[in-house]
Length: 163
Ligand code: RP5
Image 1 (cartoon, rainbow, N blue to C red):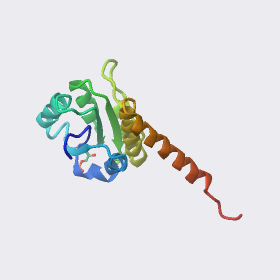
Image 2: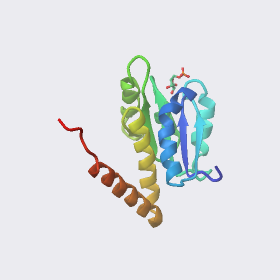
Image 3: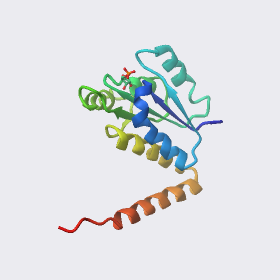
């Protein structure tokens, strides 16, 4: 997409299953975004270059997802003052608890906004990015209000099987 406002980055193509939830939200809200594979451990130079140039490229916030020793969001936050939204990707052996703890326990001074493990976290990171952008965009704020209203309606319309 031209002139992306949000970057969605992840440590591996294996993270896409989860991270596509964030991309879907941004697509639904018509937010220009980009999706990239950037690994803190396996492509550290690419990660530094990405984080150091994101502001200059016009990016307004970064959604970063990783699993296991999930250092990507924190290391990106170390190299940029843009808001970094960290998504703990579900991992094979520890079900994403390792990812969550790796992302959430940042040292004072370098914040990462940390979301829930897995798909709900990725979707909510997308919605949080929309909320950030909506601060300066009243049309987008209205679309976010409508989204919430439609969501409330769909829950209100839920039924349970007869017991
Ligand atoms: C992390 O290691 C990635 O974010 C991914 O969640 C995990 C496993 O990566 P692959 O071995 O599937 O490439 O860096």
